[in-house]
Each structure stands twice: as structure tokens, then as C-alpha cells.
Length: 371
Image 1 (cartoon, rainbow, N blue to C red):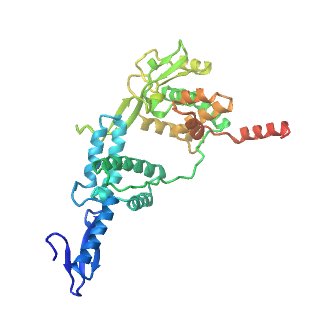
Image 2: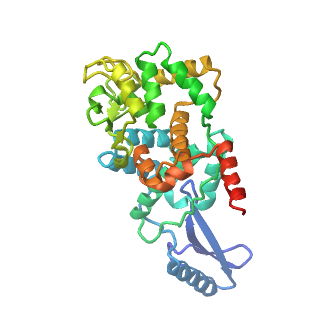
Image 3: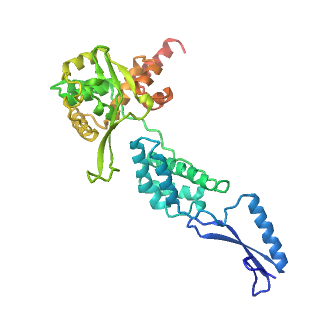
């Protein structure tokens, strides 16, 4: 006869039904399986065999941590706070708050599967998020899932995350003619901001790096620039009522971004002409007041419009600098260090783009060689 708690009972048609727990649905609701027998003993034997098989395959436990996924997201983020830069922490917090928590936070982690993550990815893409933004979101999700799996040792379901791929787009690089025209424009009636933009074009500095650059970082004795800071506008996590965002000046994005860049004679002359002789002054302003990245982007937009240049962003200047360097035979390892990259492959894959004219010259070399 059935015992209390066995979940074995006799149906109206005379058969015996045994119920067992298969796992959890995404909502946290228990999923049940059923097996039948002509007798109580037959049904019990079948269900015990199934439970034994599930046990060997490490099924999801009936009892255990019943926290929602949001709990593990918040715990993971809390643990990261002392391990990562403030800017990275803010990005993680924003990713969780804007995308992961609204869609997956109310779920039970044991119900999250590869299919669920695929549906989540598709939804983000349908909402118009860029492929890179979706990829970044999935990377954060992956990290949280790894942390969550540690709380369910041996029983957490394997989740395969497939990152979306974006068709490779050729980034905007100024042609030689465009670059000369733009440099001539910047040198006409040059002020501190135009000088800073021109300096970035001639050294490959990132927008945050040129915004944080002070004259104390330029040595006109050794003809170098020391890059050791970057500027960002971030979400204000302080809760002090001073505003939704704040300016943060801190270390560059990676250790290799802290670097010393040698200056050519032309750049040294340019710096000497614009030197305010005030070491604590910012390069973009000539004073102790900084210019933030958003304002610099607006200035650049005006400059490029005045020159009739289209599709130019601040990173276009960095791409252009790297491309010009390779066109004149700059040694790859040196260029990678000047740009602040950890690997030369990053320099080649992302920043070096041969112009059509250079490609023609190289094709002509084949002809001259008789190949």
C-alpha cells in the first residue's frame, strides 16, 4: 500500500500512478514526471528506477536555495566592487539594471537554460540593441551564471552562451587629402581645443586620455607624452544628490594604456607654440578647468562640418593615426605600445586599414617583381 509522501496513488481507471520531481521551470515552479503500473508495486519500481537514473545524472534537487536570480546578480555585483575599477563597476551595474534584471531577475536560476538565454539574446536584438551591446550583456550574464553555479555545486545546469556575430565594418579613416585639409583647418586661428584635437590626431590618444592630459604630462626636454589618466562621465553611484552623472578622472582602461609616447619634431614645435607654461593646466583648455568628453565631441563635430568631412568621430582620429603609421612602415610592436594595446593583434585587427592607394602600390610591386 502507498505510504504518505510517496506520491503514488490509484487512478479511477484502476492503474497506479507514481509522480516524481524532474526539476524546476524558469519561474521556479516544480516540474513533475509520471509513470504508471498495473499494480502499486509495479509503479513504485518504475519510479524508483527513474529516480535512480536521475540521481546518476545529477538532477536538480527538490530542496535547496530558493533565491531568485536577481539575488545572485546583486551578490555577484557586490563582490566585484572591490576588485574592479569604478567605471567598470558602473557599467556592470547599468547592464544588470537595464537588461538582465528586468528579464531574468525574477526567475529561479535552476530553470535557466541555453534555450532561455537564446530567447533573451533574441529579445535584446529585436529591441534594437547593437550586436556589441548584446555581446557585452551576455558576458556579464555569463559571469553571474558562473558565480551562481558555485552556489549549486554539481547540480547547476550547463548553459551554453552563443555570442552574436556582427559583420565586420570598415571603420572610418581619413584619406590623406582629408587629413591634410583637417590639419590645416585646426592650425588656422588655433586655440587650446583645436591644439588638443590636432595633438590627438598626431599621437593616437583616446578621447578620455586627451581630456585628462595636463601639461605636466608633456616633457619638451625629452620630447615625450606620459599617458597615465583618462576622463569619463559615469552614472553617479554615490547617492549624494549631486546629479545623475559625474566626471571621473582615473587610471586608463588597462595597464598597457599607461605609456610614454615619443613626439616627432613637428609635434614638439606645435607644443612649444601652445605651451601655457602652467604645468597643472589641461591641454584642452590651458587652465586648471577641464573639458569633458561630451563637449569635446561637440567641438569636433563643428570642426569636421566646417571642413566638409562626414562620419568622423573622435575615434576616427585614432584609426587614422594608426593607419598612417603603418603606411610609412612603422614597426608593429612599437605602434602597438604607442596605442596602448596589450597585443599586436589588436592593433592589426582594429586599427590598421590600408588605403586603396597603398593597395595599388603593393600590387604594382608584384608586377615589378614579375609575379
